[in-house]
Length: 248
Image (cartoon, rainbow, N blue to C red; front, side, top):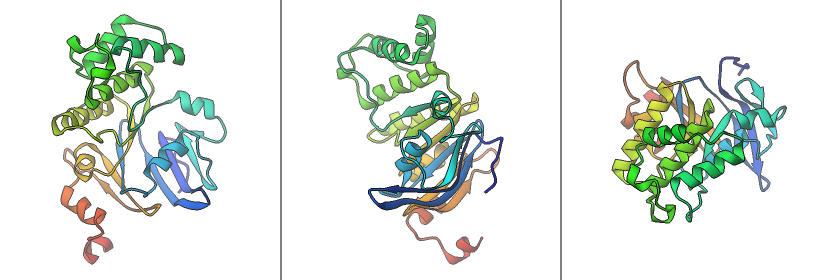
């Protein structure tokens, strides 16, 4: 795959080893601006490894990675400044409230403490105003995720990496989260999320890349104005794709 200067994220023939085992075996994909790309796969497929490699925590043994046209191995500082990363369990402080968490992490990132901007970000993620002054030890996981997304919004990066963002959320919280992600993409953010949730990926993604055993074995695109067909992706995910579909 040739370098695509328009791509916000690009993996080109990426090989990654962990503990002496090849976890990613030459995967290639791009994520364009204002797009939600879901990397779908089961446990051990290599999803989180892909995110960590974009963040520079795992060096490729082969192939290359770029973020907004910058090679990850060449200018890691610029790469990390362009990305906001949401892990599966956001590392927020339980003894602080939402405001205090946001101010603390913004200070670490060198972002000015703007009260109006913080309120606007919390409004955008629909965190109940009455909850914002409560300590996070009293928050549900969905509420914590909202604070973490508010932090990503306040950092104002163009690119978001989301690692199993809906794991452990109830159905209503999942729907809210997907609406939020879709709204962020529609406002110009580029989002790469990894997930094992077939329905959720089809609900929110413009494109889905299917990972199995460290290899990208399929890619699915949403039709204009529509969503990716869940049943087709589910069959592929379950390795029940028909020969006719494989040949298409």
